[in-house]
Length: 113
Image (cartoon, rainbow, N blue to C red; front, top):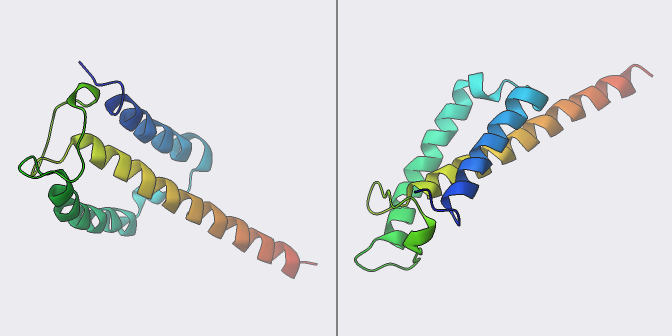
């Protein structure tokens, strides 16, 4: 069974962020190699840090297993952490992209005056 306390919000966060891009913003972020490279970099740092924080042998962060899927990979990292990480980083990048496009549009409009 899916843990409602952590798993469900993690899945919903991913769905909301992806839908926000695909249905409303349409920045094309998911088609850019730079986005996917940045996600690899994020995961590259997330794995050792999160792995150290959540290792079952000496955890610093303790999860109530009733609220997670129970799937941990790699090094005892709850998979929900990756879902939240994806949603957080992607959401921020989408906000930056939206602001960049708005700023460029504003500059064009000011130049046309």
